[in-house]
Length: 202
Image 1: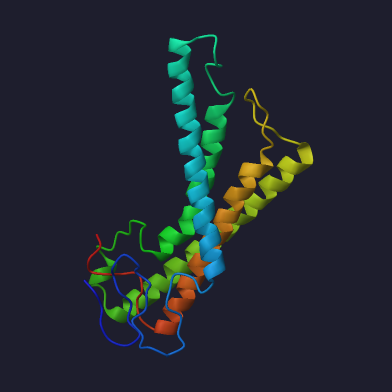
Image 2: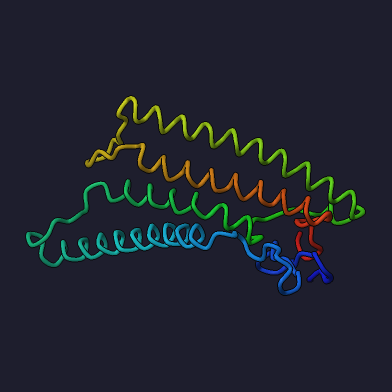
């Protein structure tokens, strides 16, 4: 179901895409910076592609090990560690876009039955609490990166991996999520009406 009228938000795949007219000078997409959006997509896509290539190579080596045991090594050292770190990085980098695209599951059984003004205040409260919690989580992740750098923490696999590298990607993803939540709160204030509660969600 889609809201209509100037300044309303659609409940489609991009729940925050505004329905303003041409030339209004108002923001029209998940993020105003095309460069940031492209970098974020390239980071997620690159990590997922690397995971696919790594797992495929491991499967091929397993098969070759049965056919010609002495021709190639039977395993890629620490491939599970590499895959896990890349999966975590891709997940954290996708959080912000998923929020802005309306991809997160939201339970609106109560809020959709409230008057529009009450929905507005409920969403404002939720977004403020979310901003505070994500800000704290981002601060913790940054401190974790600093500690790993200070103590030289590495993974325990066959190939030692400096833990600050995957932790930095996760921290960056959390920071992007914080920006996305604050951005959504600004959208809420500018619209003056609910932007999250939509009748088409459960």
